Image 1: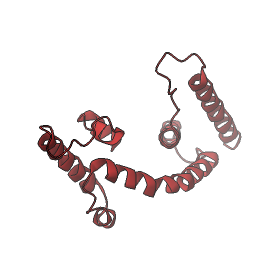
Image 2: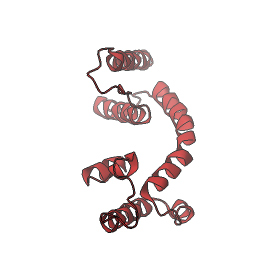
Image 3: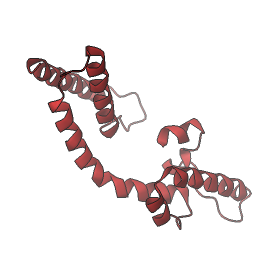
Length: 152
Protein backbone atom coordinates (compact mmCIF):
# COMPACT_ATOMS: atom_id res chain seq x y z
CA UNK A 1 0.00 0.00 0.00
CA UNK A 2 2.75 2.42 0.95
CA UNK A 3 4.53 1.79 -2.35
CA UNK A 4 1.36 2.47 -4.34
CA UNK A 5 0.75 5.73 -2.48
CA UNK A 6 4.36 6.82 -2.90
CA UNK A 7 4.13 6.14 -6.63
CA UNK A 8 1.14 8.46 -6.86
CA UNK A 9 2.81 11.09 -4.66
CA UNK A 10 0.08 10.76 -2.03
CA UNK A 11 1.93 9.26 0.92
CA UNK A 12 2.50 12.75 2.31
CA UNK A 13 -1.13 12.66 3.48
CA UNK A 14 -0.06 10.08 6.07
CA UNK A 15 3.27 11.51 7.09
CA UNK A 16 1.71 14.84 8.05
CA UNK A 17 3.63 16.72 5.35
CA UNK A 18 0.27 17.69 3.84
CA UNK A 19 -1.84 18.69 6.83
CA UNK A 20 -5.54 19.32 6.52
CA UNK A 21 -6.07 23.00 5.75
CA UNK A 22 -8.89 24.98 7.35
CA UNK A 23 -12.23 24.82 5.53
CA UNK A 24 -11.89 28.50 4.62
CA UNK A 25 -8.49 27.96 3.01
CA UNK A 26 -8.14 28.09 -0.78
CA UNK A 27 -6.35 24.74 -0.66
CA UNK A 28 -9.14 22.95 1.22
CA UNK A 29 -11.09 21.85 -1.83
CA UNK A 30 -8.02 20.36 -3.54
CA UNK A 31 -6.92 18.71 -0.27
CA UNK A 32 -10.39 17.26 0.30
CA UNK A 33 -10.50 15.88 -3.25
CA UNK A 34 -7.13 14.12 -2.85
CA UNK A 35 -8.03 12.94 0.65
CA UNK A 36 -11.20 11.25 -0.63
CA UNK A 37 -9.29 9.61 -3.49
CA UNK A 38 -6.66 8.24 -1.12
CA UNK A 39 -9.32 6.94 1.29
CA UNK A 40 -11.10 5.17 -1.59
CA UNK A 41 -7.86 3.55 -2.76
CA UNK A 42 -7.20 2.25 0.73
CA UNK A 43 -10.77 1.05 1.27
CA UNK A 44 -10.77 -0.81 -2.05
CA UNK A 45 -7.60 -2.63 -1.06
CA UNK A 46 -9.06 -3.84 2.27
CA UNK A 47 -11.09 -6.98 2.77
CA UNK A 48 -14.79 -6.20 3.12
CA UNK A 49 -15.01 -6.71 6.87
CA UNK A 50 -12.12 -4.34 7.60
CA UNK A 51 -13.30 -1.78 5.04
CA UNK A 52 -16.74 -1.74 6.70
CA UNK A 53 -15.21 -1.09 10.10
CA UNK A 54 -13.24 1.85 8.71
CA UNK A 55 -15.97 3.36 6.51
CA UNK A 56 -16.62 6.33 8.79
CA UNK A 57 -13.02 7.50 9.02
CA UNK A 58 -12.95 10.50 6.71
CA UNK A 59 -9.32 11.60 7.01
CA UNK A 60 -6.63 9.60 5.17
CA UNK A 61 -4.08 10.10 7.92
CA UNK A 62 -6.53 8.96 10.60
CA UNK A 63 -7.39 5.90 8.51
CA UNK A 64 -3.73 5.06 8.04
CA UNK A 65 -3.03 5.41 11.78
CA UNK A 66 -6.07 3.26 12.61
CA UNK A 67 -4.93 0.49 10.28
CA UNK A 68 -1.34 0.73 11.48
CA UNK A 69 -2.46 0.39 15.09
CA UNK A 70 -4.82 -2.44 14.22
CA UNK A 71 -2.20 -4.51 12.41
CA UNK A 72 1.01 -3.67 14.27
CA UNK A 73 0.34 -6.28 16.96
CA UNK A 74 -0.27 -8.94 14.33
CA UNK A 75 3.18 -8.28 12.87
CA UNK A 76 4.87 -9.64 16.01
CA UNK A 77 3.12 -12.99 15.61
CA UNK A 78 3.70 -12.98 11.86
CA UNK A 79 7.40 -12.23 12.39
CA UNK A 80 7.66 -15.14 14.81
CA UNK A 81 5.91 -17.49 12.37
CA UNK A 82 8.10 -16.28 9.53
CA UNK A 83 11.30 -16.86 11.54
CA UNK A 84 10.10 -20.37 12.31
CA UNK A 85 9.41 -20.99 8.61
CA UNK A 86 12.84 -19.65 7.65
CA UNK A 87 14.45 -21.85 10.28
CA UNK A 88 12.68 -24.97 9.02
CA UNK A 89 13.05 -24.46 5.25
CA UNK A 90 14.66 -27.39 3.46
CA UNK A 91 15.36 -28.04 -0.19
CA UNK A 92 13.61 -31.41 -0.13
CA UNK A 93 12.29 -32.29 -3.59
CA UNK A 94 12.64 -28.73 -4.88
CA UNK A 95 15.26 -27.68 -7.38
CA UNK A 96 18.05 -25.41 -6.16
CA UNK A 97 16.38 -22.56 -8.04
CA UNK A 98 13.01 -23.12 -6.34
CA UNK A 99 14.64 -23.50 -2.94
CA UNK A 100 16.70 -20.32 -3.41
CA UNK A 101 13.67 -18.36 -4.68
CA UNK A 102 11.52 -19.49 -1.73
CA UNK A 103 14.29 -18.55 0.70
CA UNK A 104 14.67 -15.10 -0.85
CA UNK A 105 10.89 -14.53 -0.68
CA UNK A 106 10.86 -15.38 3.02
CA UNK A 107 13.83 -13.11 3.79
CA UNK A 108 12.33 -10.24 1.79
CA UNK A 109 9.07 -10.60 3.68
CA UNK A 110 11.05 -10.52 6.94
CA UNK A 111 12.86 -7.38 5.74
CA UNK A 112 9.51 -5.71 5.10
CA UNK A 113 8.35 -6.54 8.62
CA UNK A 114 11.62 -5.36 10.17
CA UNK A 115 12.90 -2.45 8.07
CA UNK A 116 16.33 -1.06 8.86
CA UNK A 117 15.85 2.16 10.85
CA UNK A 118 17.26 5.36 9.48
CA UNK A 119 18.85 8.14 11.44
CA UNK A 120 16.43 10.86 12.53
CA UNK A 121 18.99 13.66 12.43
CA UNK A 122 18.99 15.98 9.43
CA UNK A 123 22.77 16.21 9.10
CA UNK A 124 24.68 13.33 7.55
CA UNK A 125 24.86 10.62 10.17
CA UNK A 126 28.22 9.00 10.92
CA UNK A 127 27.18 6.48 13.57
CA UNK A 128 27.02 3.56 11.08
CA UNK A 129 24.00 2.07 12.88
CA UNK A 130 22.24 1.11 9.64
CA UNK A 131 25.40 -0.57 8.34
CA UNK A 132 25.81 -2.54 11.57
CA UNK A 133 22.18 -3.71 11.48
CA UNK A 134 22.59 -4.74 7.84
CA UNK A 135 25.68 -6.76 8.80
CA UNK A 136 23.68 -8.49 11.56
CA UNK A 137 21.02 -9.36 9.00
CA UNK A 138 23.53 -10.82 6.60
CA UNK A 139 25.13 -12.82 9.41
CA UNK A 140 21.70 -14.12 10.43
CA UNK A 141 21.05 -15.26 6.87
CA UNK A 142 24.36 -17.06 6.70
CA UNK A 143 23.61 -18.91 9.96
CA UNK A 144 20.14 -19.97 8.75
CA UNK A 145 21.52 -20.99 5.36
CA UNK A 146 24.29 -23.04 6.95
CA UNK A 147 21.82 -24.75 9.27
CA UNK A 148 19.54 -25.56 6.30
CA UNK A 149 22.52 -26.85 4.27
CA UNK A 150 23.46 -29.26 7.04
CA UNK A 151 19.96 -30.75 6.93
CA UNK A 152 19.93 -31.47 3.19
